Image (tube, rainbow, N blue to C red; front, side):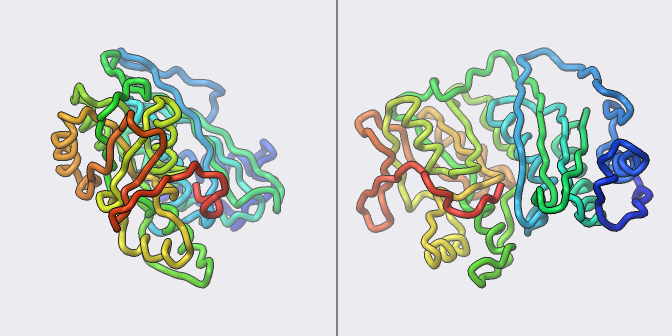
Length: 341
């Protein structure tokens, strides 16, 4: 990163920072551009060309809102980058370019905005993506959550890669790359809701190393990052699309003790909680152990596990419990937590 840029004279964002005049120009030049600088980003241009290598162009878009804006293990800036990178990565693509739209609420402290954008820039640099275009808007006080971010991501995928939910067949193994529920509980604890505190870190991270490790496997069928709705809703997504049931083993699903304790006290199920740095993969059964070994060699995959299988003899999403019984996992209807991603 470059040296620390000249800071804004103002301590808080005002509506004037979104009026198209001098203050808006200074906001972009002093807070955004220094941390997102790359050869493509031209703050004076309305559009830029994107050179792309050979392959299928992959395109995704997402929006991000979280409270608090900064939480243990991340913030809304790194969350926006990782969330967009991960959507491309689980589709088998290499992320290349982003656009960034920032909706800033009047009254947001400039220092906090700068921290978030600096974090966003570091996350983008680490993931190897370039912010190619962007825009800022300022909304009146009381009409936003401090800061909302919207991103569009472009990547490229080798044309030989065939991934998709339609590739899944009976008997395929289901893998998860690490403990589930960390992000949802970390953000909740950061809010100090229910009189609870903790130092649990969000799993917010780029999953690109995890997805690239599995791409050489001919038996790789499908990948998804378990964000809103968590692991359980990915299982239901597979069930609905294929007509096959899903069978999972509760003892095999990695859940941190801190997450399990909070869920037990408050009546949450970690299988429905958002993750922001995990991958669920469906792999042919004869390649599942090799895929798991590939994940175990990576920092993010140390706790990866084979957690279940696709089973055409079943009609529902069923979990064998720790006590040896079985229970059905219903589709999510109510939010298990206040919005956390």
